Image (tube, rainbow, N blue to C red):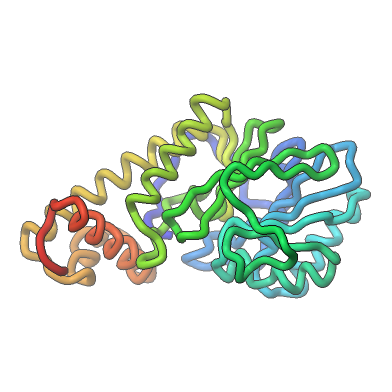
Amino acid sequence: MTDAAALPGQPRGGVLSGPATPRAVNVLAPNASAMTLDGTNTWIVSEPDSDLAVVIDPGPLDDGHLRAVVDTVERAGKRVALTLLTHGHPDHAEGAARFAGLTGTKVRALDPALQLGEEGLAAGNVITVGGLELRVVPTPGHTADSLCFHLPADRAVLTGDTVLGRGTTVVAHPDGRLGDYLDSLRRLRSLAVDDGVHTVLPGHGPVLEDAQGVVEFYLAHRAHRLAQVETAVENGYRTPAEVVAHVYADVDRSLWPAAELSVRAQLEYLREHGLIQGSV
Protein backbone atom coordinates (compact mmCIF):
# COMPACT_ATOMS: atom_id res chain seq x y z
CA MET A 1 0.00 0.00 0.00
CA THR A 2 1.17 3.52 -0.65
CA ASP A 3 -0.72 6.75 -0.16
CA ALA A 4 -3.32 7.24 2.55
CA ALA A 5 -5.54 9.57 0.55
CA ALA A 6 -9.26 9.79 1.24
CA LEU A 7 -11.41 7.80 -1.15
CA PRO A 8 -14.81 8.71 -2.60
CA GLY A 9 -17.87 7.36 -0.88
CA GLN A 10 -18.60 6.90 2.77
CA PRO A 11 -16.92 4.08 4.68
CA ARG A 12 -19.52 2.00 6.48
CA GLY A 13 -18.39 2.70 10.04
CA GLY A 14 -14.94 1.73 11.24
CA VAL A 15 -12.88 -1.29 10.40
CA LEU A 16 -14.64 -3.70 12.73
CA SER A 17 -15.44 -7.36 12.62
CA GLY A 18 -19.09 -7.88 11.83
CA PRO A 19 -21.76 -7.77 9.10
CA ALA A 20 -21.08 -5.56 6.09
CA THR A 21 -23.87 -6.65 3.71
CA PRO A 22 -26.71 -9.16 4.08
CA ARG A 23 -24.35 -11.91 2.87
CA ALA A 24 -20.88 -10.77 3.98
CA VAL A 25 -19.35 -10.69 7.46
CA ASN A 26 -15.83 -9.51 8.22
CA VAL A 27 -13.46 -10.98 10.80
CA LEU A 28 -10.49 -8.63 11.16
CA ALA A 29 -7.10 -10.30 11.58
CA PRO A 30 -4.79 -8.94 14.31
CA ASN A 31 -1.99 -8.04 11.89
CA ALA A 32 -2.25 -4.27 11.64
CA SER A 33 0.76 -2.52 10.07
CA ALA A 34 1.64 0.25 7.66
CA MET A 35 1.20 -2.26 4.82
CA THR A 36 -1.94 -4.03 6.06
CA LEU A 37 -3.72 -0.95 7.49
CA ASP A 38 -5.99 -2.14 10.34
CA GLY A 39 -5.32 -5.78 9.46
CA THR A 40 -6.49 -8.30 6.89
CA ASN A 41 -10.23 -8.56 6.31
CA THR A 42 -11.27 -12.21 6.27
CA TRP A 43 -14.67 -12.40 4.62
CA ILE A 44 -17.38 -14.93 5.41
CA VAL A 45 -20.06 -14.97 2.70
CA SER A 46 -23.26 -17.00 2.65
CA GLU A 47 -26.94 -16.86 1.86
CA PRO A 48 -28.83 -15.78 5.00
CA ASP A 49 -30.99 -18.93 5.05
CA SER A 50 -28.18 -21.37 4.17
CA ASP A 51 -26.10 -23.46 6.56
CA LEU A 52 -23.08 -23.30 4.22
CA ALA A 53 -20.50 -20.50 4.10
CA VAL A 54 -17.53 -19.54 1.95
CA VAL A 55 -14.45 -17.95 3.53
CA ILE A 56 -12.34 -15.60 1.43
CA ASP A 57 -8.73 -14.93 2.51
CA PRO A 58 -8.26 -16.72 5.86
CA GLY A 59 -5.35 -14.37 6.46
CA PRO A 60 -2.06 -14.86 8.29
CA LEU A 61 -1.00 -18.04 10.06
CA ASP A 62 -2.48 -16.94 13.37
CA ASP A 63 -4.33 -19.75 15.11
CA GLY A 64 -6.39 -17.41 17.24
CA HIS A 65 -7.66 -15.56 14.17
CA LEU A 66 -8.37 -18.73 12.21
CA ARG A 67 -10.34 -20.19 15.11
CA ALA A 68 -12.22 -16.89 15.50
CA VAL A 69 -13.33 -17.20 11.86
CA VAL A 70 -14.56 -20.76 12.47
CA ASP A 71 -16.33 -19.66 15.66
CA THR A 72 -18.05 -16.79 13.82
CA VAL A 73 -19.32 -19.19 11.18
CA GLU A 74 -20.54 -21.71 13.75
CA ARG A 75 -22.29 -19.07 15.88
CA ALA A 76 -24.34 -18.23 12.81
CA GLY A 77 -25.43 -21.86 12.59
CA LYS A 78 -23.32 -22.55 9.52
CA ARG A 79 -20.23 -24.50 8.50
CA VAL A 80 -17.41 -23.58 6.15
CA ALA A 81 -17.87 -25.34 2.81
CA LEU A 82 -15.09 -23.72 0.76
CA THR A 83 -12.06 -21.46 1.12
CA LEU A 84 -11.08 -18.97 -1.60
CA LEU A 85 -8.02 -16.75 -2.05
CA THR A 86 -7.84 -13.38 -3.79
CA HIS A 87 -4.05 -13.78 -4.17
CA GLY A 88 -1.06 -15.38 -2.55
CA HIS A 89 0.45 -12.68 -0.34
CA PRO A 90 1.05 -14.10 3.17
CA ASP A 91 -1.26 -11.65 4.95
CA HIS A 92 -4.12 -13.15 2.92
CA ALA A 93 -3.06 -16.72 2.24
CA GLU A 94 -0.48 -17.93 4.74
CA GLY A 95 -3.15 -19.36 7.05
CA ALA A 96 -5.10 -21.09 4.27
CA ALA A 97 -3.64 -24.58 4.68
CA ARG A 98 -4.12 -24.51 8.46
CA PHE A 99 -7.65 -23.16 8.00
CA ALA A 100 -8.42 -25.93 5.53
CA GLY A 101 -7.29 -28.42 8.13
CA LEU A 102 -9.52 -26.87 10.78
CA THR A 103 -12.57 -26.88 8.53
CA GLY A 104 -11.99 -29.85 6.23
CA THR A 105 -12.38 -27.62 3.18
CA LYS A 106 -10.61 -27.30 -0.12
CA VAL A 107 -8.77 -24.13 -1.05
CA ARG A 108 -9.33 -22.64 -4.49
CA ALA A 109 -6.97 -20.02 -5.93
CA LEU A 110 -5.61 -18.91 -9.28
CA ASP A 111 -2.05 -19.98 -8.40
CA PRO A 112 -1.87 -23.81 -8.44
CA ALA A 113 0.75 -23.67 -5.68
CA LEU A 114 -1.91 -22.32 -3.31
CA GLN A 115 -4.67 -24.80 -4.17
CA LEU A 116 -5.70 -27.64 -1.90
CA GLY A 117 -7.84 -29.91 -4.02
CA GLU A 118 -8.14 -30.42 -7.75
CA GLU A 119 -10.04 -27.27 -8.70
CA GLY A 120 -8.43 -23.89 -9.12
CA LEU A 121 -9.99 -20.61 -10.16
CA ALA A 122 -10.17 -18.96 -13.56
CA ALA A 123 -11.85 -16.03 -15.27
CA GLY A 124 -15.54 -16.63 -15.78
CA ASN A 125 -15.90 -19.23 -13.04
CA VAL A 126 -19.19 -19.01 -11.15
CA ILE A 127 -19.01 -20.48 -7.66
CA THR A 128 -22.26 -21.63 -6.08
CA VAL A 129 -22.48 -22.80 -2.49
CA GLY A 130 -25.75 -23.15 -0.61
CA GLY A 131 -27.52 -20.87 -3.07
CA LEU A 132 -24.78 -18.24 -2.88
CA GLU A 133 -23.33 -17.07 -6.19
CA LEU A 134 -19.82 -15.64 -6.55
CA ARG A 135 -18.36 -14.72 -9.93
CA VAL A 136 -14.59 -14.79 -10.42
CA VAL A 137 -13.19 -11.57 -11.87
CA PRO A 138 -9.53 -11.65 -13.01
CA THR A 139 -7.76 -8.53 -11.75
CA PRO A 140 -3.99 -8.96 -12.20
CA GLY A 141 -1.73 -6.02 -11.49
CA HIS A 142 -1.21 -5.87 -7.74
CA THR A 143 0.09 -9.39 -8.28
CA ALA A 144 -0.14 -11.66 -11.30
CA ASP A 145 -2.56 -13.97 -9.48
CA SER A 146 -4.93 -11.33 -8.10
CA LEU A 147 -8.66 -12.02 -8.35
CA CYS A 148 -11.82 -10.28 -7.22
CA PHE A 149 -15.15 -11.91 -6.42
CA HIS A 150 -18.41 -10.37 -7.61
CA LEU A 151 -21.33 -10.94 -5.22
CA PRO A 152 -24.30 -9.98 -7.43
CA ALA A 153 -27.01 -10.44 -4.80
CA ASP A 154 -25.45 -7.68 -2.65
CA ARG A 155 -24.26 -5.54 -5.59
CA ALA A 156 -20.81 -5.95 -4.07
CA VAL A 157 -17.30 -6.92 -5.08
CA LEU A 158 -14.64 -8.41 -2.81
CA THR A 159 -11.43 -6.81 -4.03
CA GLY A 160 -8.55 -8.26 -2.01
CA ASP A 161 -5.66 -5.83 -2.46
CA THR A 162 -6.77 -4.57 -5.88
CA VAL A 163 -8.83 -1.83 -4.23
CA LEU A 164 -8.46 -0.94 -0.55
CA GLY A 165 -10.86 0.68 1.87
CA ARG A 166 -8.35 3.43 2.60
CA GLY A 167 -5.50 4.73 0.49
CA THR A 168 -4.18 3.07 -2.66
CA THR A 169 -2.44 -0.22 -3.29
CA VAL A 170 1.05 -1.13 -4.46
CA VAL A 171 1.75 -2.62 -7.87
CA ALA A 172 4.15 -5.27 -6.60
CA HIS A 173 6.82 -5.28 -9.31
CA PRO A 174 8.06 -7.51 -10.88
CA ASP A 175 5.11 -9.84 -10.30
CA GLY A 176 2.68 -6.96 -10.54
CA ARG A 177 2.45 -4.99 -13.77
CA LEU A 178 0.95 -1.53 -14.20
CA GLY A 179 -0.64 -2.18 -17.60
CA ASP A 180 -2.44 -5.20 -16.17
CA TYR A 181 -3.50 -3.21 -13.14
CA LEU A 182 -5.02 -0.40 -15.20
CA ASP A 183 -6.94 -2.97 -17.26
CA SER A 184 -8.18 -4.55 -14.02
CA LEU A 185 -9.41 -1.21 -12.70
CA ARG A 186 -11.29 -0.65 -15.94
CA ARG A 187 -12.82 -4.11 -15.55
CA LEU A 188 -14.03 -3.17 -12.07
CA ARG A 189 -15.40 0.12 -13.40
CA SER A 190 -17.43 -1.89 -15.92
CA LEU A 191 -18.84 -3.99 -13.07
CA ALA A 192 -19.99 -0.79 -11.39
CA VAL A 193 -21.39 0.84 -14.52
CA ASP A 194 -22.83 -2.19 -16.32
CA ASP A 195 -23.65 -4.59 -13.48
CA GLY A 196 -24.68 -2.16 -10.76
CA VAL A 197 -21.92 -3.00 -8.29
CA HIS A 198 -22.02 -0.40 -5.56
CA THR A 199 -20.23 -1.80 -2.51
CA VAL A 200 -16.50 -2.52 -2.22
CA LEU A 201 -15.54 -5.19 0.33
CA PRO A 202 -11.76 -4.74 0.44
CA GLY A 203 -8.96 -6.91 1.76
CA HIS A 204 -7.90 -4.09 4.09
CA GLY A 205 -9.71 -1.04 5.41
CA PRO A 206 -13.39 -0.15 5.70
CA VAL A 207 -16.23 -1.06 3.38
CA LEU A 208 -16.87 1.60 0.72
CA GLU A 209 -20.24 2.49 -0.76
CA ASP A 210 -19.31 4.08 -4.11
CA ALA A 211 -17.53 1.46 -6.22
CA GLN A 212 -17.51 3.53 -9.39
CA GLY A 213 -16.23 6.61 -7.59
CA VAL A 214 -13.47 4.64 -5.88
CA VAL A 215 -12.30 3.03 -9.12
CA GLU A 216 -12.37 6.36 -10.95
CA PHE A 217 -10.26 7.79 -8.14
CA TYR A 218 -7.77 4.94 -8.48
CA LEU A 219 -7.49 5.44 -12.25
CA ALA A 220 -6.97 9.19 -11.85
CA HIS A 221 -4.44 8.62 -9.08
CA ARG A 222 -2.45 6.18 -11.22
CA ALA A 223 -2.45 8.62 -14.16
CA HIS A 224 -1.25 11.42 -11.88
CA ARG A 225 1.54 9.31 -10.36
CA LEU A 226 2.63 8.08 -13.78
CA ALA A 227 2.92 11.66 -15.03
CA GLN A 228 4.92 12.58 -11.93
CA VAL A 229 7.33 9.67 -12.46
CA GLU A 230 7.77 10.55 -16.14
CA THR A 231 8.52 14.18 -15.23
CA ALA A 232 10.96 13.11 -12.51
CA VAL A 233 12.93 11.04 -15.03
CA GLU A 234 12.94 13.94 -17.49
CA ASN A 235 14.33 16.14 -14.69
CA GLY A 236 17.24 13.82 -14.05
CA TYR A 237 16.11 11.52 -11.25
CA ARG A 238 17.76 8.34 -12.47
CA THR A 239 17.21 5.50 -10.02
CA PRO A 240 13.92 4.14 -8.63
CA ALA A 241 15.02 5.25 -5.14
CA GLU A 242 15.65 8.80 -6.39
CA VAL A 243 12.26 8.88 -8.09
CA VAL A 244 10.54 7.69 -4.89
CA ALA A 245 12.27 10.31 -2.75
CA HIS A 246 11.11 13.01 -5.18
CA VAL A 247 7.60 11.86 -6.12
CA TYR A 248 6.61 10.33 -2.76
CA ALA A 249 8.22 12.98 -0.56
CA ASP A 250 4.89 13.61 1.18
CA VAL A 251 4.36 9.89 1.99
CA ASP A 252 5.48 8.27 5.24
CA ARG A 253 9.00 6.95 4.70
CA SER A 254 7.99 3.56 6.13
CA LEU A 255 5.99 3.11 2.91
CA TRP A 256 8.82 4.03 0.55
CA PRO A 257 9.91 0.40 -0.02
CA ALA A 258 6.39 -0.41 -1.23
CA ALA A 259 6.30 2.80 -3.24
CA GLU A 260 9.55 1.76 -4.93
CA LEU A 261 7.86 -1.41 -6.18
CA SER A 262 5.14 0.73 -7.77
CA VAL A 263 7.75 3.11 -9.20
CA ARG A 264 9.60 0.21 -10.79
CA ALA A 265 6.31 -0.94 -12.33
CA GLN A 266 5.65 2.58 -13.60
CA LEU A 267 9.13 2.89 -15.09
CA GLU A 268 8.68 -0.44 -16.86
CA TYR A 269 5.31 0.74 -18.22
CA LEU A 270 6.82 4.02 -19.47
CA ARG A 271 9.67 2.18 -21.22
CA GLU A 272 7.26 -0.31 -22.81
CA HIS A 273 5.21 2.56 -24.21
CA GLY A 274 8.26 4.48 -25.48
CA LEU A 275 7.76 7.37 -23.06
CA ILE A 276 11.24 7.08 -21.54
CA GLN A 277 14.41 5.59 -22.94
CA GLY A 278 17.05 3.27 -21.50
CA SER A 279 17.16 1.64 -18.09
CA VAL A 280 16.46 3.51 -14.87
